[in-house]
Amino acid sequence: MSAAPLFEKVALIGFGLIGGSIARAAKAQGLAGEIVTTARSPKTRERVKELGIVDRVVDTNIEAVKDADLVILCIPVGACGPVAQEIGPHLKAGAIVSDVGSVKGAVVRDMAPHLPKGVHFVPAHPVAGTEHSGPDSGFAELFVNRWCILTPPEGTDRTAVEKLQAFWAAIGAKVEVMTPDHHDLVLAITSHLPHLIAYTIVGTADELEKVTSSEVMQFSASGFRDFTRIAASDPTMWRDVFLTNKDAVLEMLGTFNEDLSKLTRAIRRGDGDALFEHFTRTRAIRRGIIQLGQDSAAPDFGRSHASLPKPDGK
Ligand code: NAP
Image 1 (spheres, rainbow, N blue to C red):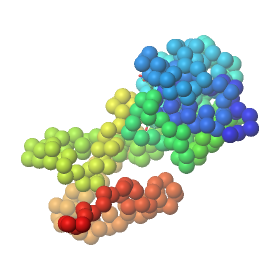
Image 2 (cartoon, rainbow, N blue to C red):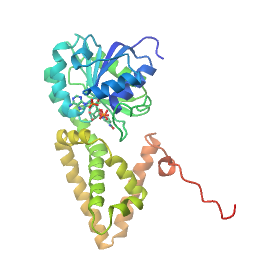
Image 3 (cartoon, rainbow, N blue to C red):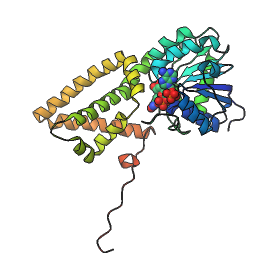
């Protein structure tokens, strides 16, 4: 627990995986005098009340932001503009307004015009998640040792940025500041393109004619299984990511297609050296990620394995 709360009142708009994880972590760390939340549907609001994690659940976004010192939009990227427009006139002077969207350029473009002078806009993206969504899916440790990227527009009050930085650090994240455009380019290759590839490959496997879907499921090797986890991610969130980070994704997709053609050619020509050289280079990247503490070194991501069958008669 920190000595005094960083913020008197924190308002979380949206209570799914990310909003719910922030609420749980901020509560555990005593970062807010009061945490108030709301969600779009009465069903989610009811469930959040039952969970009993936050101090208050209110029915509207306007009620939630009243007197809040920190407001975080934890909703799909495409909903951030309209919600900013709705809450703009009701924000407290001096409040920090942030979000958690996986795309930053579009969020800045859509939200900034609706935020009044005297309110500090510090967009954020916690690079942490799972394929689950909804109010029950969050957990307090989600952000521990994960990066949270802040993309404050030029001229943003430095104290506000530092305060949000302290908030994310207190719930375990490592914080980096960059421009929205650079964020979108980096995430296009590290997150958005891998999701697109997973969505593609799982869809392709589902549509094969000579291999049945039940065979795909039954004999799914670890490579395919890992793709299915990513391809189970929330359809609304990912639709919005590809609609709003179109340019950066298309740029990375162009490069990816060229590289895929090179590998296709190597396979067609039986060029083992080219394949071996490529796979050796990519293996080193995996080692680098483990060295940076961004994944487990345990084989097969530390999945537990079933025991051997007992020998007959024992
Ligand atoms: P989630 O579990 O599906 O929760 C989304 C929340 O937003 C729910 O409370 C939902 O309310 C509300 N909502 C949905 N559509 C809305 C709309 N049109 N207007 C207002 N509220 C709306 O999603 P999440 O995974 O927490 O994602 C939230 C944000 O975090 C997204 O912008 C995403 O890009 C970003 N993010 C996600 C991950 C990840 O791995 N999931 C990682 C980093 C960042 P109802 O429940 O009432 O529908």
